[in-house]
Length: 383
Image (spheres, rainbow, N blue to C red):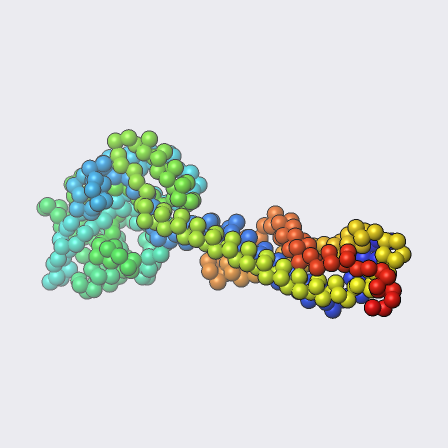
């Protein structure tokens, strides 16, 4: 009997209940999308920040003292440190690249000027610096010799283009490199020439020596800090530092995004509750006669109000389920627009969305409590 009465109530007020259902579906869709975004935003944000390059630097302690490591620093360390770091590598470590900087003379035909030569793994910096624009393309292997990447400013000053040769000289040593590509980084790298690490070591005359190591590590600011501490314990004679500007900016932006998501969810819940409240207030006025008749036939107010609350609960559950499905599409759209990749929908968001929607629907059903004050005698007299 209860189920039959409930079904008749839902059918009898289709128009007004449809308004409340649309409000609940809309609110649930946005809430579902925002909660999915909140659960996935850390991973997406971390991926975006990894395009900014390295976030941990390892170097001799006196090279990093003061304001930071400098390409001009003469402090060097043994190349075997890279193997130590590789042994500690985890899936979170995206890239590791050693660097050796030399201030050399670059000669091309009649042009000659000092440049910073950076020796590194030319295939490794592709993963370390994915945002760099390299024309016509990256060098595929660190085993390729006498190939270099030239910063756009150096290329413009020396009139270099892919395929041209350039001579680099330092302290009586010299090497001849062929320009493989021109890079555009938007930073000091535009004024540098990148060569394979062994060639920079030969130019400097320091075999198996490097100046610093850069790492790109995926994870939150705390996870990056934790990995840097582990490296510091394994390399006590060296300085291991996260690049604070990147880690702090990532953490700050993540906190602000989550605060925005929480505020938006709260605001949507309030607006949805108000919409349901207005609908239920009108519905309560329409059902005064039905309630009066039920009371006259012996129905208790608790069972009558329970019937109406069950109606609202069914409405909230339906709105939450349909809103969750719509939220999946909305979250994918947000992910494509903001991060260029779809947000991964999570099934555990469904019970949360349904629970919130049912709660909002029940909160908006407060006007139904007024039905308890309906007097059967007044209703039966037609007043």
